[in-house]
Image 1 (cartoon, rainbow, N blue to C red):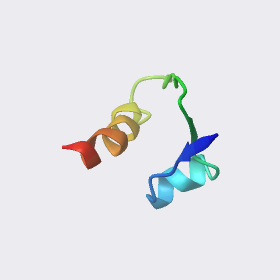
Image 2 (image 1 turned 90 degrees about the vertical axis):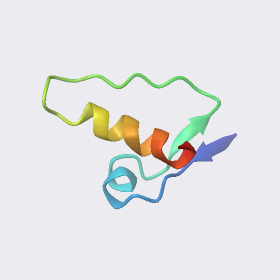
Image 3 (image 1 turned 180 degrees about the horizontal axis):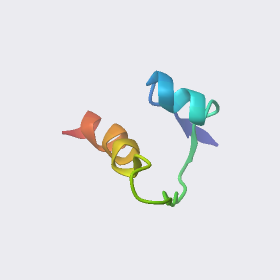
Image 4 (image 1 turned 30 degrees about the vertical axis):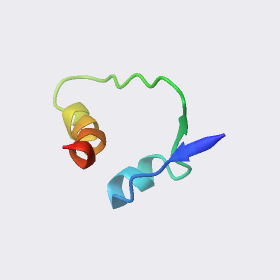
Length: 47
């Protein structure tokens, strides 16, 4: 199975093996924990 790796140091530290493709990933947590930062890390390469 393929894995998505973004090559952003803080992201690689959180998920060193990447994210399986295809898969669904839920990003959740309390306010102020950086959820949009993780989402932008995925979206910006396609913009």
